[in-house]
Structure formats: C-alpha cells, structure tokens
Image 1 (cartoon, helix red, strand yellow):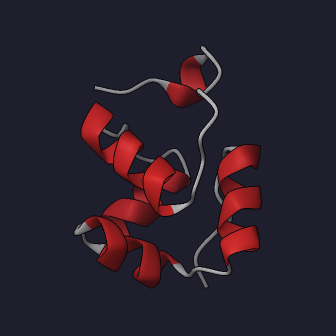
Image 2: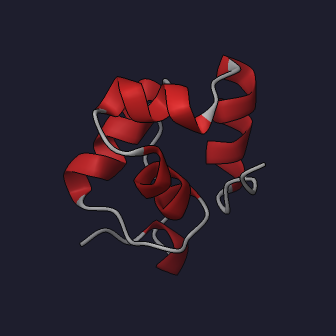
Image 3: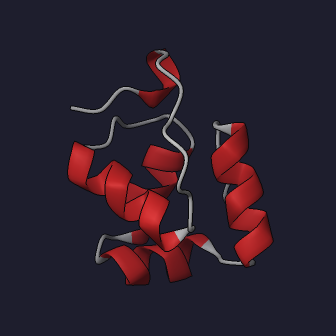
Length: 72
C-alpha cells in the first residue's frame, strides 16, 4: 500500500474524493509512481503537475508558500 500524502490538504482531498493513486494518475495522465512520488514529497512536481493534481482533487484554494509546496 502506498504511503499517505505529505500535504495535509492533499491527503484530505484524496480521502474526500475516495480516489486511489492509480485513479489520480489516470485523471492527470501521469504514471502512478510519479503521482505517489509527488504526493509523498519524494519528487518535486512541475507547475503543470501541481495544477493537474489540484484540479483532479477539486482543490481550489492556493497552496501555502512553504518548502513542501514548491514546484519546478
């Protein structure tokens, strides 16, 4: 089983939507492992990836300005 997202808002949105990493990956057109790596903080997303994740999870508020929410 994949670990929970590092970001609390991402974890809450993932839980609320009831989506698996596979389903999120299919929605944004990225490999599941890439989505897991982004969500758990193992990889830094591009702005497009970050925006696609937010859209897939219906996150509309801007992210905090801290190191956990930096994009490439």
